[in-house]
Image (cartoon, rainbow, N blue to C red; front, side):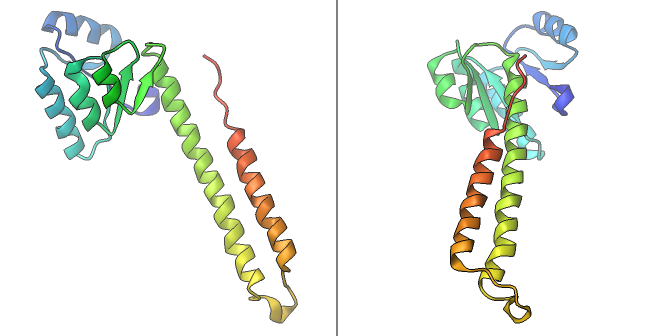
Length: 169
């Protein structure tokens, strides 16, 4: 997560000793003995500070925080209420899949931006030409050719989206 600029913070209902042991192994900050209300207040506080919050949980006590977070991620083996409250469900119940989800989200965002540039770029150029803006200097775009270009634009956007790939881990 740190590789993606995400600062993990473990908020757990477990006791101080257990939480500290796990946090030291992972090299992350932690908060122990957290009630569901404490977790919810923590998520709310972080959001009020302008931070984007990703919450990962699996139990009934995590459901309110999962719903409050910008992105709620439920562990697939968790309770139904946690699954219902989350935006994303890790079906394999492997927390390591969080990295794959973040990678997919980043690559999807990149593809969306590429397709937006392509689609908007086409419209920015082709529509004024089709409307006759450059007709005084002899550049025109016939309706049939405009339709072909529009279809080609759609095909290029679709192909670009299909090129989204994740490297297997």
